[in-house]
Amino acid sequence: MSIDRPEIRSFQPPVRTLMGPGPSDVPPRVLSALARPTVGHLDPAFVGMMDELKTLLRYAFQTRNELTFPVSGPGSLGMETCFVNLVSPGDKVIVCVNGVFGGRMAENVRRLGGVAVVVEDPWGAPVDPAKVEEAFAANPDAALLAFVHAETSTGALSDAAALAAIARRHGALTIMDCVTSLGGVPVLLDEWGIDAAYSGSQKCLSCTPGLSPVSFSEAAVARIKGRQGACPSWFQDLGLVLGYWSGAKRTYHHTAPVNPLYGLHESLVILAEEGLEAAWARHRDNHLRLRAGLEALGMRFVVSEEARLPQLNSVWVPEGVDEAAARTRLLQEFGLEIGAGLGALAGKVWRIGLMGHSSRPANVALCLSALETVIK
Ligand code: PLP
Image: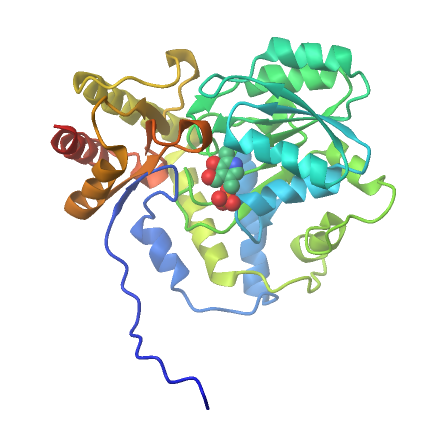
């Protein structure tokens, strides 16, 4: 043997308070659910839990969509699952870009051989429905509209109902990224008429990272069934995945992440116990607490009040403060993680998350007092 035995011990992560753009704090109930005994992914008991998961996700998404389940992978895989199943080569897709994640949607369309018609808005602003209307007028053959409901790179919330209504008027289907919005602000798939949506487990659902709830309308399913040629991804081909996630007889597709799915089930039970309206109100209340304290410290928000996400607060780094050094002090002295700016906002802003279990008055108080210390 030429490789020596490594002298490595079990990993013991430090205890942190997670107030960045995700992952958020994971509550003890979810952590203990993750530690329950692993069963087979086709065990009848597990299949029963999968059915409950779909019911719980339909509540979180506010949809009756049959095709609603968690993709075995992070939000990015949920994103790709939507695009790879709905976009065929040559399809024209209107993609709204007002931050990092809209840019990734456009990249998905291009990689699949589609034509991305990009509608741009400034970073920090919501998507402008008037520009989307113009894009459809100039591209009446567009088959899809794609947008990010809650842009995590900036903290801006777009008007999903208005955007979906425009797409519907022009006979196009809608793909919505609700990775950061689900559980923190209203996400009403059926009422808004959204055809495909993907989210993430690690934001306002407060589960561990690595799962991506998705949901597809009947119109989206009809488009998927009617596509010419095979879906270019075997793993993400919904026609195949469904044999595992629905129907009377479940067949092996891939080995599901059994314990992470226990965790997601528990986090959705917690959300259902609290109730969606109460969860949205809690996110709003804690945002208002944080906002009052940040403004008292002289900090300014990046996003205008009407479009501000309660769960992701982007503020300009105060003049003269070394932003990276301040974040290092927060982590080392207070065990507190906040987020740096991304893309065009890198080095200029902090992103303070109040997502899911992290959205608590105690976290707000810790963040404000720690920030006060490090910006002095
Ligand atoms: N979309 C948005 C809006 C996000 O905030 C993120 C992650 O932060 C993603 C997609 C990608 O999710 P993941 O990092 O879980 O792949």
